[in-house]
Image (tube, rainbow, N blue to C red; front, top):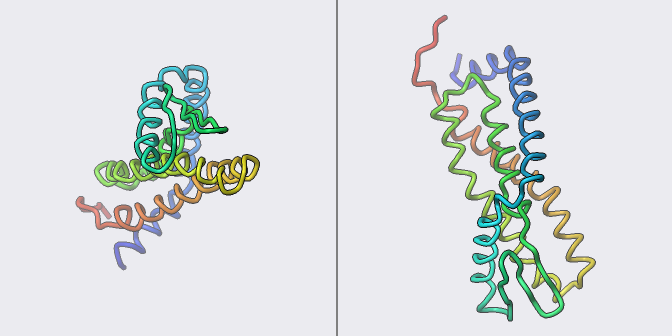
Length: 179
């Protein structure tokens, strides 16, 4: 029996445990998000940093002014809030990964390689707002922004999880299993 089919058989046998772990981590995530929303000023330095990165990306192409975590354009203001940082999405991605108790910790920690991709995707989501505003107007721009936040991030997380699982989750175990 191949290593992959053995892993899938063990996963199916232990699906209840994985679901329980996922549920516990998801509950912790819910309370963490509520705490973060109440204490969002903690992330203000990161918001300013992300706004500065977006400013540096856009400055050669448009007239933009940076004011703290706000990007000021002619007729358009973008406030980089704590939701724009990609922290919520990164934590949820890590919850998915750490829900698999039968995968060794060293392979789970490799999921941290994917977190910068999530953060970069959020930076790009904010960076395209003004060009979209110029072409499409405010109403359509906000619809696209909300769609990308709600669905684009979810799709990205699932794709990154599938990639992590394929590359790291299905690797042969370093430790011999007892039969």
